Length: 257
Ligand code: BJW
Image (cartoon, rainbow, N blue to C red; front, side):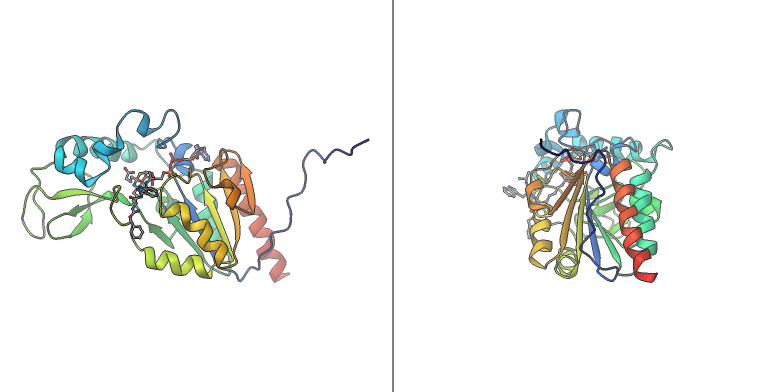
């Protein structure tokens, strides 16, 4: 008679040392339980607006008012007091506090929930919703108010060029050199709440593997590139991320025992 696996198998020991640097990539799924929308889920943003219209430089050139209206609404949504970091953001901030090898969170999200939860080693590779940039002179400033084509840049004085500080399709994501160096050097790469549809982030797992890192996917369901990960854990971020960080806490505690 075949033997059944135990109902709650103990997860395998993580093949890492507490001195190994960790890189965490996050996507919209980590903020879903905070009340923010994802992009590609059936109820996601791309089900109600065309990305070509609102998330490309060509869309902005064609109809700046439509793009401003889209981002003004999302900015207001993010500033709603009901939108707060959740247990997954908090667990990653705690990880940074106890992990001896260092932790870099690279987020594709334009929300500020990682920073609000307390993550400090953080790269917003697709920009930030609460910043604005002048397309004419490049000046970037904090911005919480609605933006319009009539706004003037505080640095150069020109109007018409003020835009959200987000990375649209066809634009180069931010801090790729720093991210590439961290991926080459890390001992653990964890991808959380991202569908793996958008490049170059979708290729980070391969870069981390090439450097010898253990790779883990934490997502509601298998992503596009799920088979590339050595370990895959599926469930809501507020459950699976704190549980995984608990395993890392045990690794760190064992090293100091
Ligand atoms: C949960 C959950 C819960 C739900 N718990 N999980 C052909 C082939 C290859 C590449 C290209 C190509 N044609 C063009 C490209 C390049 C292009 C690209 O990738 N296109 C693809 C669509 C094919 N990429 C670019 O243009 C990028 N730039 C670039 O490549 O520059 C060239 C270059 C690169 C490198 C060096 C030199 C030059 C720029 C990409 C910019 C993306 N911008 C956006 C908008 C940002 C602003 C905004 O927010 O409005 O970024 S698009 C959107 O997608 C946003 C996201 O950051 C990004 C990723 O989405 P994410 O986070 O994965 O969300 P979803 O919705 O897709 O997935 C959510 C997941 O969560 C799902 O799996 C759910 O199951 C899960 N989930 N609830 C846990 N509770």
